Image (cartoon, rainbow, N blue to C red):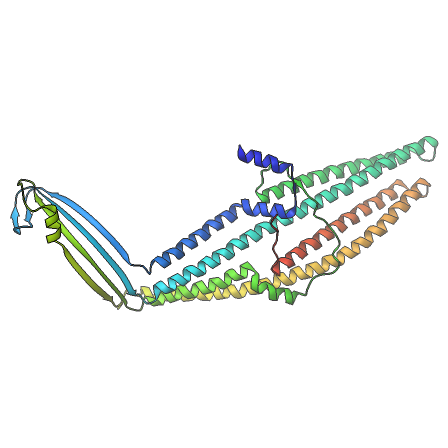
Length: 433
């Protein structure tokens, strides 16, 4: 019930693109799974720290003996029922294990850092998907507005054509063609409405927002971009230091290096020390009296200490095979790092080139809108004066609508490409609201 109330309240609020991205990151199943994976990494690091602490164990046991057994007091066989109880406390500590615990700790720390970068990469991926879906919704709204304006203009021109038919300056064919134009515009409005609905559903899906709830979106604030930002080489130099995918590959190399060190540590001897104490209690169930529990525990107390040196000699090539596997893993991690660097350079260059192209297209489509607007007004004027046909009016109106739609698309494309390049430079994809 509380969740339904929250969704109902949110439905009446205006959602900006930053808020949509923040909501998506907070409610993404993929992000939550990555957060749980990061928590696993934190647990592994805690366990690696605990490996440096001594291991302490305490035990207590008891048994009833029926029939033939050894009497611990006389060390002879007896045929009576007895009760035997023992207590123990021991501790052990490895002093040297080929530096495997040290490298395991470093591996756990690297995996934690890798997990944080993986979480950030998943958050950024989710936010970017939402931003792209938001841009599609904005384009759908703009396309619907353009189609609606064209339909209204066609309806007004049809009304004037009918008036001109009454006074004899236009014929029935002109009215029929204008009615066909209006019908086509009505179909285009319906198509744009369906496209907008599909884009909105896609945005809700990317946000993990309830599909049956209303989502009131803010305008994206589309505006012309004056000039592209810094060149691709400068952007790549910044991206190398902050890109989470590349940082994952770097940490992957560090993790593989530590795993190789752990495998090599199995070739070295291990040294451990320990100690403990133990005592027992014995009772003949067919006799009364005997030593008390306290006396037996005190008199039977035993203590011991030990040191163990283990030298690996031959384990059927398991260690050699493990070292070889970890060495290959390190080589794979380095290859992946080289690939991610090349891929990042390609993506930055591609995004920078796309922004250049989108910027040039924006300037050209702006000129197209101006020219097509003039042509559409002149065509309508000529039509009213009998110097142009309805087909000419329809052709210029369609051209104007297409140029307006392309101009809107180029503006949104510029904003999207610039957002990507800003992200590569280290800027946050969304701001906390």
